[in-house]
Length: 82
Image (cartoon, rainbow, N blue to C red; front, top):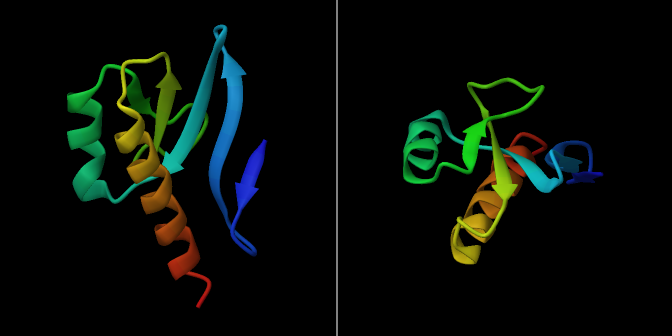
């Protein structure tokens, strides 16, 4: 499933390895911090690994941080539309 702003996709949600994954866009300055903070945050599956992370929803990433990463992805993608 792709979730879009008007013309840009800011999140990909899919099932892989019997888990739900979400690919989100991230600022390269935060990319590595998220990857180091949680084992379930990886370079994005099938996307540009410089700008996208994959979140594996396995219960190890706090819900507030998941929401924060999704919101950041939305903001980064929506900003380019203006």
